[in-house]
Length: 349
Image 1 (cartoon, rainbow, N blue to C red):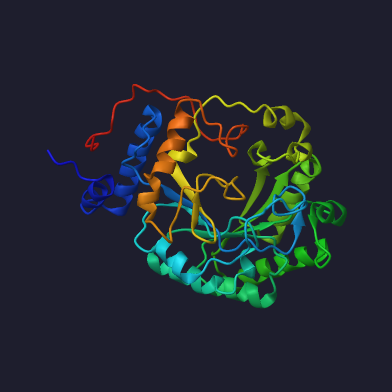
Image 2 (image 1 turned 60 degrees about the vertical axis):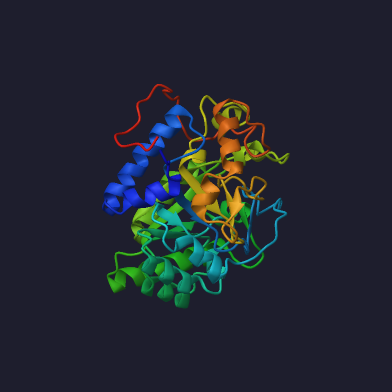
C-alpha cells in the first residue's frame, strides 16, 4: 500500500473541509501528536510571529534587543518576496498572528503594503506591537485606513521616571509617547472605527508591579479596548545576562530553576519566522541559534517535518534537550501528557 507524504495527505483531506473544520481537525491531530510524543507530524503549525524588522529605536532593559543589546544577528526588514512566500497558500495562523517579533514595525518602509497583502491572502487576524514612539498623526491615519486587526501599544509605567528607566531613549519621552497613544485613540474614536482592536500593555516587573491598577485606569479612560498585564519573561535563561533580576521578587526562583515538568508545546504547534526567512521554534530565540530551516529555500510544510525539527522534538520528548535555547528554560508552554491517547478519527497513520 502506497502511503502519501503528510503534506499531500493533508492537502487532499483539506479540500473536503471548510476552513473552520480544517482548523479543528488540525488541532485534534496536533493534540494527539503532542500527547503521544510523535516527531513526524500530520498536523501543520500555526504561524505565531512574522518579524517585519529587527531594527528598533529604543533600548528596553528587559529586551535582548535593548540594553544591553545582546542580539548578534544582522539587522534588516523582511522583503516582499519572503513575506509573500509565508502567507501565500498558508492557512494556519494564530489569532492574532503577530507581524512583529523584535524591532519596531513602524520602522518598516513597506509595512502597510504588506499588511494589505496579508489580509488579501486571507490572514484572519493580523496584529502588530509598537512602542508608539513613531505613532505620529500621519501614521495613526495610515493604521486606521489599513486592514490591521490588532494593535498592541506598549508603555511600561505610569510616570516618566519609571518609563524612561525601562524604555531608554534619547529622543522620545514618556509624555510624548502617551500623547501619541491618546491622539491615536481619539482619532479612532472620532472615526467610529472598531479596528484595529487596541491593546495597551504593561510588562509586570518589580519596577512596574505597583503601577498596574493605575495603568489600567488611565488607558481604559482613554479608550483602549483591552489592557494586558504581560507576564515577565527571562528569555529561557539562555544568556549569561541575568534577566531574572528585573522580575517580580516572587517569580525569580521559578524563572531561575532551569527545570520544567513537560515537553514544550511550541515544537508541536507553532513557528516564528525572522525577517530573513529563518524559521525558529520559539519567540525566545532572539538570535536564531536554533534554525529549523529557511522559507527562501523550503516550504514551511517541509521545514515543519524536516530533520532539524524531528530531532528537536525527539530530544524534547525524551527529556534530553540540551540545546542552548531550551536547556535552562522554565517558561515552556505545555502540560503533562497521556502517551496512551487514542488518535482522532481518520488520523492518517
